[in-house]
Length: 59
Image 1 (tube, rainbow, N blue to C red):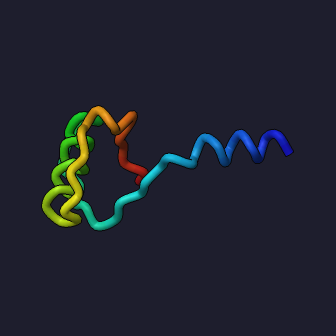
Image 2 (image 1 turned 45 degrees about the vertical axis):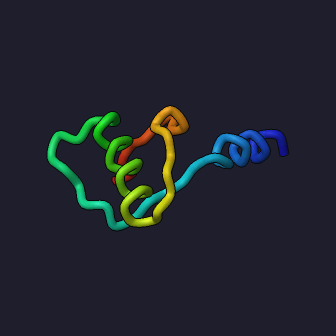
C-alpha cells in the first residue's frame, strides 16, 4: 500500500554502522565526523560530509 511505499522510500538511502564506540555528549556533527573518518580509515572510502544528510545514534 502507499504507506509501505512511503516507508520504503524514506529508508532507501540509509546506512547503519555497528561497532563504533560511543563518545560522551556526542553531537550529530561529531557523529558525522566519526562516520567520515571510519569510512576513510577502515573502509578506504572517501566521502564528503556534505553527502551525509543526517547522522545519529540508534540506541
